[in-house]
Image 1 (cartoon, rainbow, N blue to C red):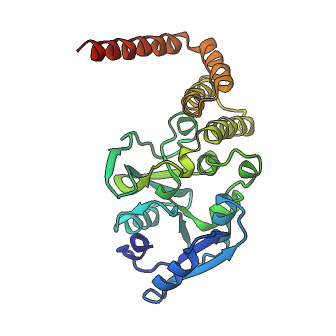
Image 2 (cartoon, rainbow, N blue to C red; image 1 turned 30 degrees about the horizontal axis):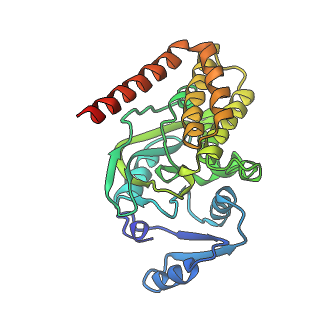
Image 3 (tube, rainbow, N blue to C red; image 1 turned 90 degrees about the vertical axis):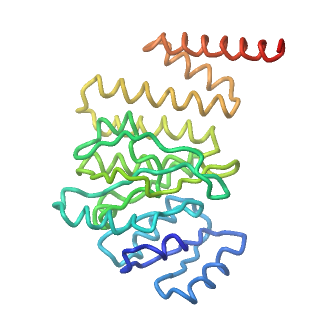
Length: 284
């Protein structure tokens, strides 16, 4: 809330959707709102992140909407730079994203995100490279967000929530151009227990997002389709491995093996190297 309230772009409406929380979220928001009249609290039954964001989009009065997850931070210039960027462009440019840092629970920077960026019609590339990276990095025209149906609640209903951001971004990118500000203006928080650490649904959700996106866009060239599937399977494999789900790990690595045998060879070499390093430590 403080990082949203301290934006250099002052003409903000700050909508907090209290999605059926059982802690003191409502009390904290009401206290902060005493000093900032732009803050508005909406309390709903727990329905998941997609439904909560859709509530915020519908209630918003402005031309643009931006999303800030409860555990992330915005740099104080983020919204101003994004609004200025879109105001210079035609309506066919529907959204703008920024880069981010990974931070821990103490607001300390752990590492930077990949510096890869793309702008314009990025749909085919975004399927593989997933440039936006997190839900707190995007600002989008509100009318476009409504036009594409907002965020899809069916993932959470199926028990594979966590990749609704990617689904939303791909629907945007399939129809509109997207701009980028290549500056790290978001602190994306990762710690045990937050949504991004739920490895099993994250892996399954990513695979389903790409499956749906490819099915909805059959005109894509085969090389783009193969690249998207291959990259997402690799991501899912690491998620399944961290979740210690042997069946899904093996099933995914088998799929990868068919198209990229060298990936499995690299895994084997990395494991051998780790074992060697472990043995050397024991010897020394």
